[in-house]
Length: 454
Ligand code: FAD
Image (cartoon, rainbow, N blue to C red; front, top):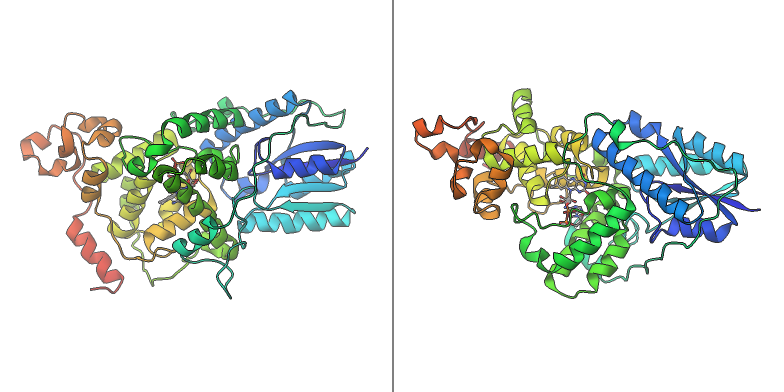
């Protein structure tokens, strides 16, 4: 009886999973394996919100496998040693895994491939599982990646994505696979109270409902903070309980501006993955150095983390992040711009805090979006500064988003909630809310000088 291992990583799903399909095609029995990787823990990526969401995803994966006659095998430890031990135990000739783009994933593939080869086994790495287009599939002539989004997008958009695959009807596993000792979400400490539910079942329910009710209006409403009208699919895409390729096909059936804008956002995800795959050091170092000499101010950084900067839209977003482990894209941009350009603090300080809390936090999207906002990344206008008050009036015109997250300002009506410092002193004293941490014109002048633009 031939056996193959299907190593799940960022593809915790049965629908449209080329890794699982290839493993099933190549052997009579498959060992569906997930390793709680101590390397991820050691690198500080094992944040409570993601650990809790992962627990849901693993429970869902095991349930889906059981419906098909299978079972999930769960191990914890060093990923290379654990995969080799499982392959030895079941006599698997091949191990199948999705290609990753981070330095960590690339090293994992190299080390695993070498270790398996020493045992006479083969690692099969599958592209276009985590992303729609594999990193390196689209490159400008003579270069190893696209450094600017728009030309990347045209190339990406002009190339048909592979067809999504149905979930397998059955997953035959070796007979002696027992029940896995799954982690429990309830057992994770320090989880955001409003954290979403994970798992493939939830991902599929959510996407079907969102595509039906909200996709068409996406182009008009994705920056409206109070509307909460974006898809909130990022955690499902991060853990791979939903396939980005399937999403492109499903959204693309509706040829309207909402669908087009949404598919374009999915291309951003691939864009960042291909930058990171070509420049793994961009996870830590400036992609385009601007000779920044960032300020260090722990008190200001902490006020930003705590949502106590005195700029209501920034503080509302930071409180949402803490409460839900998630924030809409527009809010991420505003808070990141505030930290890096208004306070002129290092983007790595903010990126770390986001990674500590974001349920969708990942190296490619987080670090490269932070760099984009800080102007050290791929933004073609690296010195643009987002004024929090102007942005608040534009994207939360009635002030509803701010009042939702800052109960202490709930008594302020309409857009007045964005500028509490304009209240007469006696009225202002009624609100338990800090004065602005910095004056905007002075902060802008400081940034302009720092970037040598003055
Ligand atoms: P929608 O607006 O519904 O978009 C659909 C999908 O497109 C998203 O789920 C996401 O997969 C993708 N997408 C949208 N915008 C971007 C973008 N700018 N870059 C890459 N992919 C995008 N996204 C993450 O998945 N993980 C992160 O750690 C992360 N950190 C970020 C940090 C900063 C400072 C900024 C500015 C953005 C960050 N983003 C990150 C990108 C984006 O903000 C989120 O993906 C998006 O807000 C998630 O909400 P949604 O699913 O409702 O998005």
